[in-house]
Length: 224
Image (tube, rainbow, N blue to C red; front, side, top):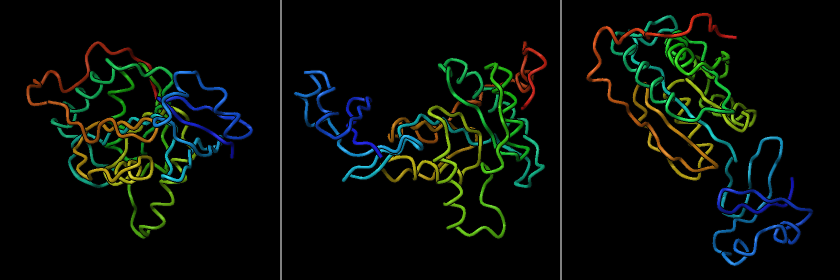
């Protein structure tokens, strides 16, 4: 653990807090009220202070699109394919440079991720630990699984997963109590312990049937 200061989205470390303070700009030093003092674990990028703890990471989380059921092999519905189409277009307008894409192994998550992968020209990795809480898994074990996953995430991650996983990840990664309203194919975005949006829905009501399947998509992009 390193002595650290966090201010204005910037992390400064030192051999002690005085050393870290000496590395701030004069303007940052004058604005003392915006400085958070604590310690950082560089392996997990968890920042710990007297006021709590948070992760110095960016995490974009997308709940899978509408599906025919909740079984592992349930396919997306027509509405779900339209939702995934809209999510892919939304993400295409964002800067995803440096984000590492990963998704749950459940079919509805994979099908949702396929739209994003094809539109945004990124490559998803399937991660078993992104599953929802499974039969026989206690709430404590599930929370521990999500916590371990959060610890291992890189600095920037794009995740396609399930409502319960996303809500738990939001709870563990932010300094608040997030809403558990996570609609299908909604987007939640956490940056440095702050939830910039939770369960943001995209409007798929005007989709036409010809929009259900992606068009003008490069071929050959497969999961790794």
